[in-house]
Image (cartoon, rainbow, N blue to C red; front, side, top):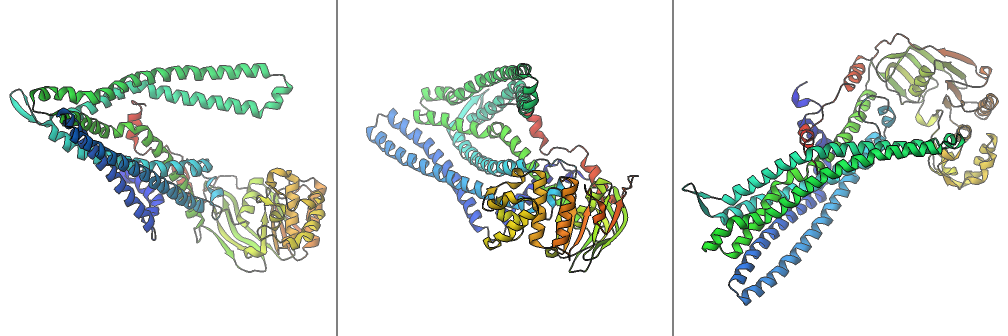
Length: 605
């Protein structure tokens, strides 16, 4: 792999970010977004123009004061009011436009990432492959926010500082005049001084910040350990109370907190050193050019206004030059968030690519109206590409009841193949159309909302079906829920595991599918209840074919036939390309823009 294509290479990092987030700015019909971006840039130009005008106003005001000209001084007061009003209007409009773009970009990127992630079981499949894409909730909720908001903040402030540097370097150069050094006339000495002063400040801050970064990292680690200790104490509350272990637990928590106190003191010392330098650095930046220009002022070659103007221009130039240092921590945080979003996107693209495979090395799903359900010459692989099931052929006819048990992992994988969410393997799978088949796993999906909506899923709830819903609930042993059809709840949390599985059978009775695929769908029930649920749907759905894959607590006599699965034990590599991709995903990954980490190791704020 070339360096240009290496995962941690800056070129690929920015290219991937533009690929994922760039269409917000470049896509068709995004004229409003581009118009607002141009408006934001023009507002930045306006801010710089007002800063230049304020700098010129300062010179004119002090020149008027030097001449003791009341008329000119009053005129400058009027000009200042206009500058002040312009600054207020420009900064306010800039804030509104910037925040609108930030929210709009975040909304668009969130919708795109969720759309790709929550499609065709990719959210489920991505969790099964190795890689740095865990906790997608945090990546979508927080990292996308940082990636979009901070990107606009950084771009806006960088553009402002570049314009500021260009304009004020010219002003500072013109104010510098010529000075004689070792018999030579040297122009622009204040510009050289500004660059040297900013460079010196960066070096000193870099050296002073080294202990601060280590102290900050240590404190964050100690804070995380304390939070984990509190969570552990909360989760083990009952055992602690039964054993009367509160005193010991209090002492443990106090000890853990004391490690925070020590790291806090170390961080405070580092902050104090850096604050002492920063305070002096900022204060001296406003005085140094005036001290340097005082001899020329006393000689009469520089007016008081131009002397004060040079001080302001010097501060603006050093502030612009300090942009990389001032924003180092922000850039590092933005880079980390972007990388986390890209890792999630990459995982989703990987499983989407693998699910899209066709031909002899893929599981080929044939979803057409059919009179049978089954698999032919099916090999099922684990997510790492190694074989789990080999050369399986199974056909289920309408009205037939089949039990498939055996190795739990192999049975679970076969259920997911028939449910259409397991892309790893090869062979042919004949499935009825989606509307004619329902797959029910051990943890049925119960959407939040009213109980009526939950029972009707995936269809729409109709109050006219209440009688049928109440009858279905009563038939599966959930008569106590008949009066709760209008209640809104998270039913997965409200009901017990057994009640959730009973509710899934009530849903089957209402939806009346022709094909029912159950995966460990009765494992939370006692044997008698499990047999009763199956007998109920056999009685209510006499035309339906039922295949139960996995563990059934009840009797196998209720089924027409039984198939026992055995898992391939030798770890044969079934999918070479998938296996190679998984091995590569386990390798250490180079971080993009690693120079930021190297700088951050020696600099802190």
